Length: 229
Length: 124
View 1 (cartoon, rainbow over the protein chains, first blue to last red):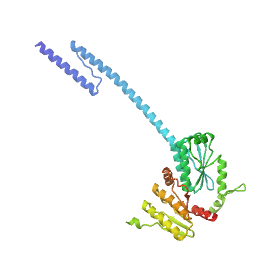
View 2: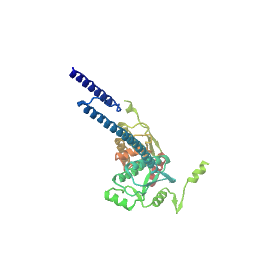
View 3: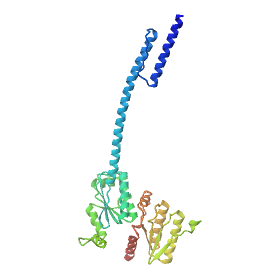
View 4: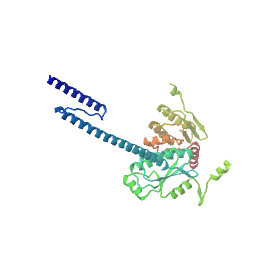
């Protein structure tokens, strides 16, 4: 009889342990195994209780860490967005094409050139040529510290594309370093008109357009304005 | 075939032929235009040809080659060809394709193209 009750008791306690474990698995971490009897099973029960304690502790820690990480991630995402925005702004700012005289456009390039930037520059310049109807464009690369093969290639393409549109493109301000690189890379720039400085390029362009006669500068800008009035 | 019937008009004004391409070019049309223009140069004795491609939004390598070929063919028939009004996107495509059209004259618009031809004819 006694053995039977003991077995029954033990069964009930094991059921209790099972219940607690399933509650824990379901997420209720406050629950613990309760028992008044001390026997062989008590050790198991205590061990399980300890494990649940540890689990609770670790879980709390990882939740806290997760929250921190998420916060950091958000910060990084915001930063990334700002960086992208600024890059875009820089791209637009970095290739202004301005009309400086009748028929003459200038594209001053400052800073390091990469393929993407030269691509944007090229598109801007070609669009401006078509929009203004200017037949001379000066590409001033005084502010460019170095070029590589790709960039030199892109410059060549820009000049050729401008020629296809019907405009002449002059490259000015090639620094000694760039001249060395270009020759060492074996790039042939003989098809491109190059001038030492922006001034030389301007003088060449104005002479070509008959805007510089006997040291005097001519423009039909004022005539145009009078016509408009 | 309707396509075969379509012809691009070639207008003669004084010493020049003016061709304005206003339809999408396909290969056969390009070839047809090429021989048409050469015939017309021969028939009228024109000294210059202005080809306006300002409405062409796409030029593939074949048409690019036909255009530059036409320029050199006309040159040996003593007529200068000026390609006029190329779109920036077209220019970029041609350059990317490596078709830089050496020896072909280009101008921003008809007016500039006409001036260019006049200067050239006055020189001779």
